[in-house]
Image (tube, rainbow, N blue to C red; front, top):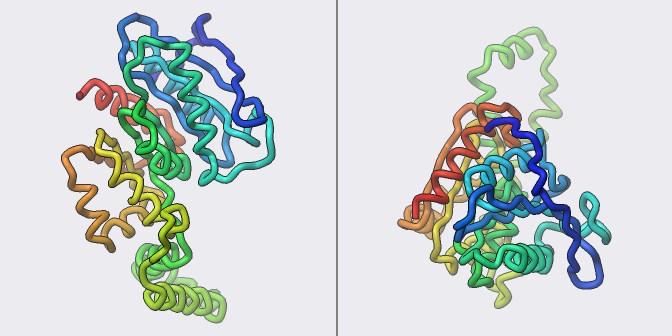
Length: 291
């Protein structure tokens, strides 16, 4: 992904969402004829630039290659008005952004929502409710629950530590704090047991489901293309994979023909290196042209 200079056509926008004003940047496509555009949904706590300027660079990459993009701040983030808003409560913000994007780019036939972490979860909640949304790009989706985090910590931290020389060195030199570490381990095991006793949610309102089930509810009702990008060095991605592994319904959804998965083994949660951001941008562009 090149560090392209800001094209003069990049346009700051403001638009209403309920009784607040949101701020965004429109990146028109350099060439005409685009029928598919991208709305970048920001996760919290971030704003429309993104960590390591990823959202700016991604938007310029796509616009330079013919895909218009809108990136924006939802209520309470960046320059947008309002108090801090949780990612599970930004459906109105996403709808306002799609309304604005399609108004400024009337040639678009559909919009793809692109989100990292809890923004990916927010797009899963929203996508199936808007026929204009033609695809989703989910990076390291946020599915964290207390029990899920406990399972992941047990699997990827405590067991992994047994194979680390540094752990055994601390133990043999009496620099290990057994009381504190064992307390964490026991609490993790208790949370896993508590979650198994609680079982599945039976609420009639899907918005009240535990996060992984709420997200799956939306994705199962969204039959259009979805790209899932996972970092190899990210606990959030591991929690997502663990949630998938623990659920038959999640595994069936991941195996569906409409779902494409790409893994970047060396990447961290926010793709902090240029090489990783480039892979995300290039994979997103190729996927957008694949259907």
